[in-house]
Image (cartoon, rainbow, N blue to C red; front, top):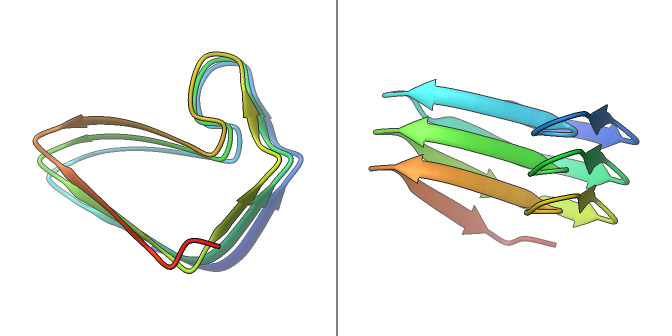
Length: 90
């Protein structure tokens, strides 16, 4: 769980410029996070999520000027039998 965090100007050569989460059978919750000007050489400049049998929740968060070379400037999601919930995105 990540709550009340700010991530800015982070860089990844592959996935997940600011946050890269991979999980099996466990979920992750992000609340009140601010992601600004993060970059990724592949996918998910703000957040890259990879899951099997899990769920992710993102609440009351903002994604501003994040850039990925391949996909998902704000969020990139790779899911196998999982679920993503987005609530009150700013």
